[in-house]
Image 1 (cartoon, rainbow, N blue to C red):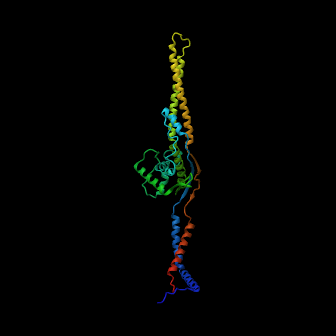
Image 2 (image 1 turned 120 degrees about the vertical axis):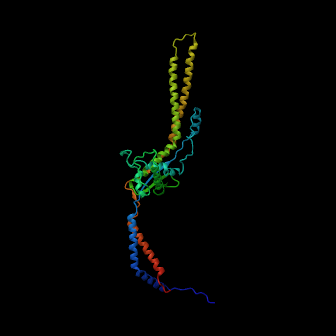
Image 3 (image 1 turned 60 degrees about the vertical axis):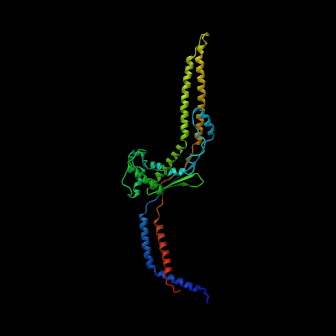
Length: 344
């Protein structure tokens, strides 16, 4: 039985075949030139029809802070019916990556969309939603938000279109993420066809998010401080009234036979002392709460903001034509390789 002998190809034969195949590819030059003209024409048309892509980036640094000593303050304030349980809380609904969800939330995005581009022109001026509508390419019915003032209710059509705009922006135009997965720098990137929209929307989106974040983070402490201030003012009025009452009850030359006349004075002095003690404790708790609030308020510093002119992410026509030409040449070589009529 004969064994299969391995096929041996000489280098000279391989070079001859490669040269012949190269000549075969060169003979296809008219077809290749035609393909180059056709593909480059399509690429040029695509470059002409592609949309502008203006990119605005805004980044900020978020530093979480927690107040210490909240337990002792809560115990002391509980004697007066004041709840300070939130001052020492270590957890927060805004901890971790929840700040990223706030940036993409419907409440924040729609509030920014309904803000006026130029508030100096009055309540009937154009909103950011009106500026974004032309980018939808007639996917929605004609609607205007010039006369809408947030958060007043809108018509059913306006509300539906606004939700559609919100969904388009979150899905296609807005990207929020941490610069470093373990860091505290957060970046929001907005890419749209309008340079003005990208700039204003990114700035206001971060501003509204920061304002909501700080308000919600310190809302419990602010309410407790307001209650302490109200209690302190009430006790101060009582203390002032007791001072005037004690002064009015003083008898300079009372008859020694009637010592009972000094009893109202003593009672008034006692009530004044009690009121003063309560007032002192409430004021002490109030100042401690204010200090705790100051240490609890998060620090947010803007790092980078979008500045004109914005970076245009539209692809260069030179790059598109070069890529199209390289693609045609590559496929022509592949076709020549497979269709070359080799004898071996």
